[in-house]
Amino acid sequence: MRVNRIIVNGLRLYCFRVNDSVVFLFNGGVKTQLNAKNCPNVGPYLKQANRLTQQVHQLFLNKEICWNRNKTDIFYPIGLEIEI
Image (cartoon, rainbow, N blue to C red; front, top):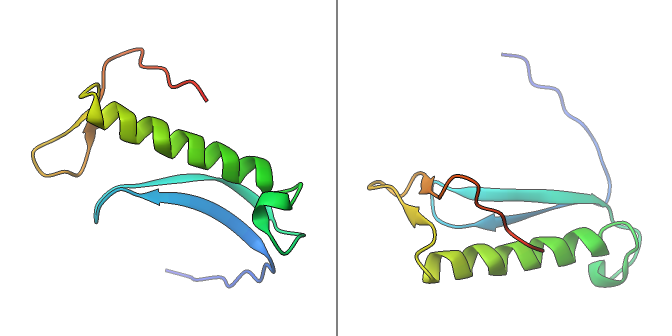
């Protein structure tokens, strides 16, 4: 396998680490401000990631989604939509 090193300064990707097996990866961008919330490039993605994380957490609490036996996958109803 060949590994290529890509140098990117300031790139931000947002994730929600649910457990050791499951991670939600969200959009991001190149951060141009000191505070990500104030950055026009990544601020909207950060807000969206926070809203989606809260929604997923609430879906678990409401038992609308649930883990498989090994907690490596999530069961959800067909047609589930998450409003952000």
